[in-house]
Structure formats: structure tokens, C-alpha cells
Image 1 (cartoon, rainbow, N blue to C red):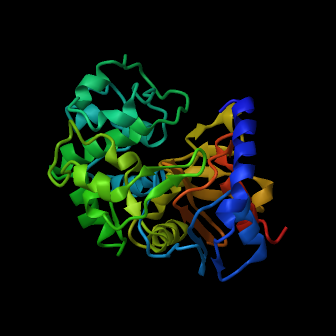
Image 2: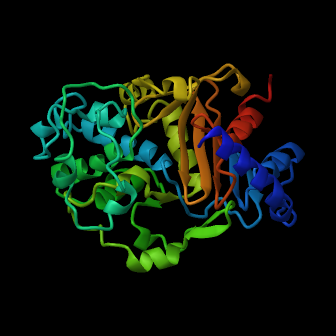
Image 3: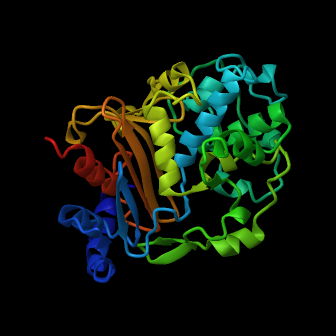
Length: 356
């Protein structure tokens, strides 16, 4: 977003803010938190600050939300589980265990956005077409990597296809059986199974871009493997709730808690790529954003943000104190400072910078 457009957007938010915040209660009430949520025009949602639960408007801690790019954090856990079971290798070419035309690209490069791949034109729409993955990959010239960090949903969409080629199950079913159910995690990539999820609304300009029930009626069946066509769901289509995300963060903060090895968690938390001039406070591990900012206290934060259809989400934890923080909503100001959502910045400063 250009500086001019950013200022115009923030000015528009200032106009609609009083109408949005007027009837939104926060339970239990916290004056500072309520001020942050109102400042960024949050419609309704849930905030989990470790064991403290705050509900805004009609938000519920067990309500399903489309988690957007927080999906990448959960997908990465499934991929690391497959690596531990020796069904995948982090650094071998993906062509050694799938027929995908990916040159020497490895899982590590997909998980860290260092593959050299970027989102094809109209990538947000291609999953609703019959274009196979090989047709998209044929538009790329596969050069030896690793390449400079370039955030791409396509990387994580391909991981779903990899899972399906190797397991001969759909990514949805494999993740359910091997990650979600063992962890008592409530989640699905399948919109048809998430009909009670929260819709999403765009605050500015006002609209309802995500009607979950209507999308569920038109959702394709992803319960059977189709690796040439299931190349988007694992990037951002996870539906889950705040309580389940807290389980994920506690698992990672606890070095795997016996589900993943400490070595796998360490690999996920190790910097693989830098956002650079786009956002110098942020780097990337394996399916995980890493944030170092004095405003958030002395500890490094690990987790992921998620932006989609007007919703602005995040889930982060600290290593030493094992402090977890989750924010999910069905609409808010989408303004950013670099790659960090302005809403998320203020919430992280509130949650992790309190002792400063």
C-alpha cells in the first residue's frame, strides 16, 4: 500500500471507528485493550493472553475462524512430523519422492519461502479452476537455490500436494488423522466442514467478502487425494479456534511436548530468510515468523500473522516464559506498518511489553 493510500485508508477508518466501537462490549473489560481494539475498528473477536480470555462483541473462544496464513504454522508442524517419520526429507530435492517438476527445490526451501517460486498471476483464483499444478510450475524456470526470501502462498500450497503424493491420502485427511486428532486440535482445511465458522467483513470499504455458508455450498470435495489440484488449501484455508491455536503454541513453546522432537522445533525457529527492507524486525524460519522488537519486551516472538477477507489474526509465543498470545477477529483495520499489522503491533506491545 502506498504512503498516500495508507493515509487515505487510515483517515477513512477514523470516520467509521465511532460507529463500529459504539456497541462492542469487551468481557472482561480492560481499558487499555478495549482502546486498542476500538482504535483499529475491530468488529468482534477473541483475544487469548496465555490463560486470560477476552471476548469482544459476539466473539467466542471456541468459534471457528478462517485462520488465513496462520495455516502455514500448522501445516509446517504436519510436514515436520512426516520428516520425523522419514517419509520426507527436509533437504533432498522434492523430485526424489514426488513426480512434481520442481528441479532441485527442497522442502526446507518451500517452508522458508526461499524456493525462488512466487504466487502465479491470479493465484487466489486458480484453485477454483481445473488448471493442474504442473501447468503452473511450467511457467517457472527452476534455477538452483536457495534463493532470497520471498513470501509466497504458492510455496505452502505445494506442500499440500507433496503430502498427498507421499501419503496417497488427501492433505485434509492426513492432517486430521496424524496432527489434529492426536493433539485434540479442532481444525479443518475443508470449507464444507466449517459451516459454523465466523464470516469475515471488510471494515473499509464496508463489505462481506467471506460468507462461509455460501462458500461451503460451492466448496470442492478435498477428502480424496488430488495432488495436481490441491495446491492451495494448506497455505491459508485452515479453519480453527483460539483454544486450539493455544495448544499449538504451547506445543512449540514446550519444544514439541513429545509430539514433535526438540530438534524439529528448533529447526522451525531457526532463521532461514529475512524480510529485509520490507520489515527489518521480522525474519522467517520454517513455517514460522520470528519477531524481535524492543516494544514487545526482551524475548523473541515466534508464530504467524494471518490476513484475509478483512480479518486480521495472529498467534505468537515466547520461548523462555512460554507466554502465548492469540487474536482472532471477523474484521478490523487492515493497515500495516511494513509487514506487521498495526493492530497486531499494538496488541503485541500490550501483551508482551507490559513489564517495560
